[in-house]
Every structure is written in C-alpha cells, then in structure tokens.
Length: 291
Image 1 (cartoon, rainbow, N blue to C red):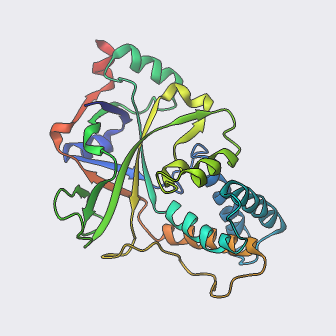
Image 2: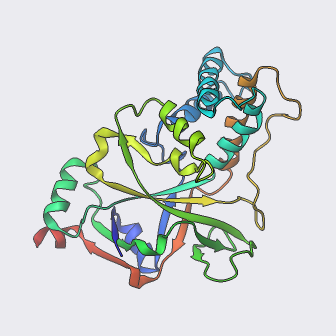
C-alpha cells in the first residue's frame, strides 16, 4: 500500500467529505505541461478558433501537421502505408481527448519539512489543505461507472462486462522527466513500438519537462469510454465530411484534431470518482507545518 498527495482548496476539501475527488480535462486545464502532443493539437485548434471556425487549414497548420505525419510514419515502421494516417489519426486524437487527469505527488506532504519545500517551489501557496489517498484503489485498469456524468463514478467490482451507463478506467502512472520534452519524436517512438501494451495511450500523458522533476508526480489517468450513455465508441463532432479520404492527408488530420476537440468541449469539464472515506485523509496545511 502506498499514498499519493495533493494540495487542495476549500471546495475540494468539502468534496472529499463526501468521498469525492475531481479529475480535469487537459484541454480545459491546459497549462503547458501536458506534453508536446497536446501542445500540437491545442495550437492547431487555437488557430482554427481565431480564424472564426474556418474549416480551411492555414499554411502553418499544414506545415506542422505534415511534420507530425512524417514523425508518426517514421516511428511506426516499414509496415505503415500513407493512407493509414487517415484511421490512425482519427483513433489517436479521439481517444486522446477522452482522457481526464488527477495531478498528485508521491512526496509525503503530511511531513512538515517536505510540505514546506514543496510549497517554496510550487505555485500552489493559496491551497490550504493536503489530501492523501491510498493508491491501492487505483490499481491498473480499474473499472468505474456512473449512470449520469454529473454524478461521481463508483468502482465496479462485479459484472465487469456490463457496460450500461458511462464507463471509464483508471491508470496510476509515474511521470517521466525528460530533457527533450518539446520533441514528440521520442513519445511517438515509445507509443508505436510498444507491442506489449498495444500502443498504450498512457504514453501521451506520462512525460514532463525535467524542470518539474522536484514534483515527483503521480498522475491518475481516467479514460472515459464515451460521452454517450450505454456506448463504448469514441466520438467526433463531425464538422468535417471525411467519408472521402483527402488526397492531402494533412487536411484529414486537421479535421480530426478539430472534430475531436469540439466533441470533448461538449462533454464534461470534470469527472468525479467516489472513494471510500477510509482511503482518504485531509489535513490543513497550517496543522502540518506546525509539527
């Protein structure tokens, strides 16, 4: 059994009294520390919005996307055919946008010296409480369900093949801190070469710049299977008619990025997990620092 910790505010403290923790969507909570893949998608989407929802990609968009396609093709290997980017990018960006994150640390913040050091380096000095969670409840691929997205997800211990309602899976991942954080070549190399985990999407969220290494972050990754009830399919907002594959695959990737982000914007900004209160503990920052 181990513990993970998080600095929280008054609202999060009240939620913890009811055994709830919140997970946020990286697109909405974007702070430049999610990895270059999400940076890339966000840049494309931001330019799309600035142009008044123009469905025509700019020269800058096309240039960036072609670079991404080239890297994807190179890291995939010799079996990759150019037309594969059509389906690959649809799956990649749609699944990417259906993930939520909870940002924790393995640093023992119930220790006064550790907390003081953590506060001096972080920008979270306004957070007044520390939440501790027993991480054993977040074992790999735990299945969670809710019947309404406004309600918390509960851990499903029986009948795992029943997919009524809304379903998701948690993964507790340890963050890797890398020097070449701005280069997604290494990230795609790991993703495309990992036969054992069937190209796990955890690779898209498990890296940060080395300058954040002091955080010793552990991240709760939650994959929401669908924003539609009783459904397991990934979704698109369908601003683009992609029934005919474009001859320029950069246009296809542009459409999938925009569609996937538009789709997730219509979904929840946060999801909540319901955790047994015995597995949670909250202490005030002031109390800890006095020890």
